[in-house]
Image 1 (tube, helix red, strand yellow):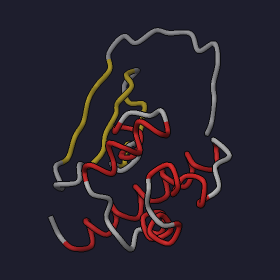
Image 2: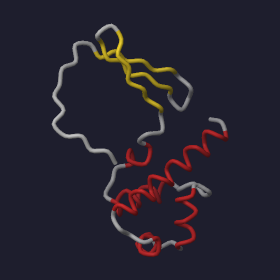
Image 3: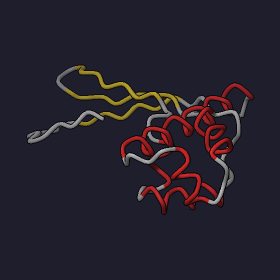
Length: 116
């Protein structure tokens, strides 16, 4: 993985951390206290200047009541397109692999949409 990809991941995970902290109305000092780290260290995680070690990510999942997937959701660019009366999902993985999935004969009813 290239350095710029690693930085992209650190920044994205940090943004997700801040987003969840804000959603739970935790101050940096409150969350840092629960993690037994300094507010300055938490700030470095949120800004993406320091990477979050695996044990700390696990701890964050428990304290913030999320799965580890929460922190990585949205990293891979996904596009939805409509071709030949089919719905296609396409995107690129972090490793640069192209992904295309055709969803044929898809029928569903959306009852609620939530944008976060």
